[in-house]
Structure formats: structure tokens, C-alpha cells
Amino acid sequence: YSYARFATRIPTPVVVTVGEHVTSCKVRPEAYGIGTTRSGNTCRFPAAAVKQLEVSINSLEKLFIFVDDPESSPPTCCDNISVFDVTTYPNVDPTGRTKSTGIQAAIADVAGKSACTTGSPCTLYFKSGTYLARQLFLRSKVKLYLQSGAKLKASTNPADYKLDPGTHRTAFITAENVSYSGIYGRGAIDGDG
Image 1 (cartoon, rainbow, N blue to C red):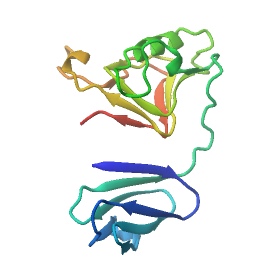
Image 2: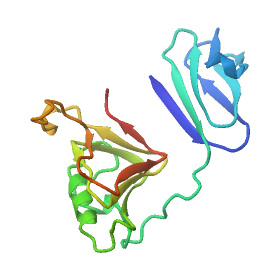
Image 3: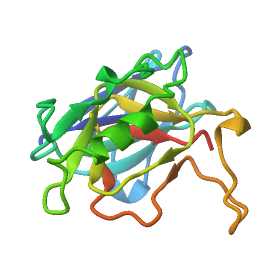
């Protein structure tokens, strides 16, 4: 499937263009009563307020559209005191072409900063881009902020993941025995599943 995400406080026209003549276009949930208009290879409809929409055009794959409120107070990048730019660390590639093996080291480095406390955790800031990564372990006192347009994408190589001996499972992102940690922002996490 494909998806799109945007933030707005006002009704916004959405135009979806496909590579063929549009004969049918539906927006779900139908309970929202969103009407569509078709013209050539486009489907148009209004989107307002916070919603999660599924758009079906002809028999093509579904498009999911997420409409959010604008962020109220995103962190400002990057003061190198409490907010750190992940792209300044070695082996971090925001293009998605190579694996960003340095993300775990960046998390560990930020966790060790004296400014990062339980009362004021630090932020590792992911700017817009695609960050292909292997298994990640969150650390206490570090939050990951994914700016709108940032995608943290899981590696598809099984060798990049350790099997948990107790559960016999693995995960892209693990938060075990951590506090004052988390992931936030308008970016995306793509676990490739």
C-alpha cells in the first residue's frame, strides 16, 4: 500500500492522480460522508479535521491518507546541548541508500550527555530523509524525534537482528528497562512488515 500524511487546521482539497482514467473513487470510512469528483486520471475530495482515510481508485492498490493537526511545539534542531542532530554522527545516511549503522552509537552518545536527566531527557533529532537501520535499542533519558518527512526504515537483513533468548523473538526497535525515553514527531517508522 501507499500512504500520504499532512497536517492542516482548515478544510484542504486533496487531488490524487493515477496513471489511468479514473472510473471509480471511494473514500472510507463511508461514515464521514466524503464525496469525490472524478476527472480524467484524477480523483478529488475535501479533507478536514483529524482523520485516517482509505482511498480506493479503480482496482488499484489502496492509498491511506492521514490528516493530522499541525504540531504544537516540535523541538528546534539542534543546540547540541539537549537536542542533537543524528546526521552529525558517523555512519548515518539520511538518503536511505546505505545502512545507517551509526544510529545506535548516536543513541548511546546522547544518553551519556550530562544535560540528559530524568527531569529533562535529551532528543536525538531525525531530519527529513530515510534512515535504513538495523535493530535499535532505546536508552533511558533519550527521545527520538522524527521530523515530518523522516522515515526510520528497518533493514530486511536477518543478520541485523539479535534473537531474544527469553521470548525467541526479535524487534526492529526495543525499549527494555528504560525510562524517560520514547519516539515522537510526524515522521514514520517502517518495519517492513
